[in-house]
Length: 310
Image (cartoon, rainbow, N blue to C red; front, top):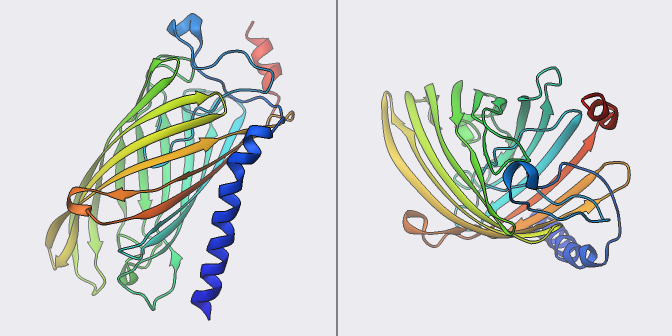
């Protein structure tokens, strides 16, 4: 009965997402949010002036873009991923805040709700919480090239006995680079690493673990408010197999998808998206679905701040 109900709810959710692109084409909502690349700074522009508001920019799925939040603008990001073979699913909520006195600084956090297919009868629960700090070292959302290194603290709030967490505190680094190739094509590149001093497996064994990841994406700017993208992500991580013993594992996913935007006069931009992760190489045969929803809006008077700089 529970499975039938869950299947029905998922079906309704997917049906809703399938209708959103149709609503996009006829939408007339207007708004304001960070736009594309400034032609004066980069000699190339990802958007032309439009009456229906700005284009989509910082809304990648599995690959991280290198654009920090602008002054006075907060972003709320929700994702849901379900893999059919492993039976894993995970929901995340991330909130990104600019540090206004230093517009190059950004603070954010990620909350996770997860179910592991290894334990089908365990239900779902809270995963590990991540606290992030990111610095806009090179460029910004109006530059041709941007680089914003990130460091994150991983808190062991998930129950490792049901594979909901790493079982120990950890640290993660990420080096995202974004490059505007031309008016219709943007690409993002990621390289990161994760270290956990005392990770724990489902039977209570502990060991130090290390992992690294690589990501790359191409984003086709078909329209200012409709994009298609193809991401490639590679994760190679150690898992605890016995006390002080680990084993390496690798996952490789291709992730084709689409995203679109609704802009409103009060400054709110809503960006839904959907993609279909496909396993290749060591992950061959894996299939899944990925759902994305971002809400971005100003929380203070951004126009007053901008006018004060002139």
